[in-house]
Length: 216
Image (cartoon, rainbow, N blue to C red; front, side, top):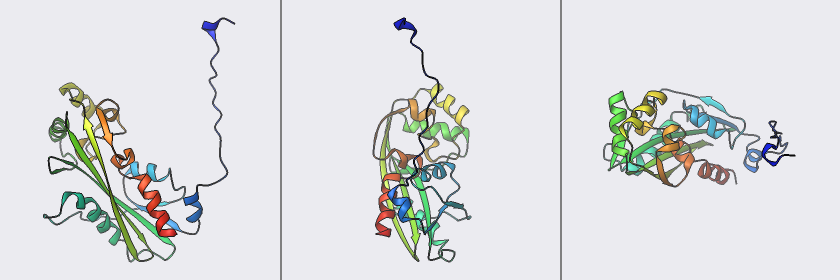
C-alpha cells in the first residue's frame, strides 16, 4: 500500500458505560435542582450529575456596597439559595451560583451595549483579572456556600479582534463581556491559574467534593 495513501477510518465507536460515578451513586435518593437560567451551568452540571431539574426565580441580586469583592459571589449564591428555603424538601438539594469578573478592584458585570462590551475587553486586554464563582448548596434546611477564584491573563487584543468577537458571539449575557468557551477564549487567553470551569460559571472540581462532604 502506498504509504502516502493510507485509508482513514471515518467512523467512531462510542462506548457507553453502564456504571455511574461515585457521587451519582450517593445521590440516587436525592432530587437535585439547579437554580440557574444559565445554559452553560446546565451543561456543566450534567458532566458530574446525570439527573437534575432546572428551576428559576426572579431574585434581586443586591449586595452590601462595603462587601469585599471576593465575598460578593458567595453572598449572592447564598441569597439565591435562601429564596428556595421554603420549597426544599428533605430529599432535595438545590444548587445556586453566581459569577463575577474583577479587574483593578472593580466588578465588571454584563455589558449593556456594544460600546460597553468593547470598553470592558479593551480594559482586560494585556492584563490579568480574577473570576470568582460563588456556589450555594441548600440541603436539609441548611445552606453551605463556597467560592472559587481563577486568574485569567489576556494577550494584548487588537481592535478588530474585539469587534469580531462581539459581533459574532454577542457576549451581552456574560460578566466581563466574554465567554472562555468561545472564540475569545480560544485566541485571547495567554494563561490561566485555577479551574477552567469556574470561569465558565461552575467550579466542577470543587463542587463535586463539596457535595461529597455533605453526604458523608
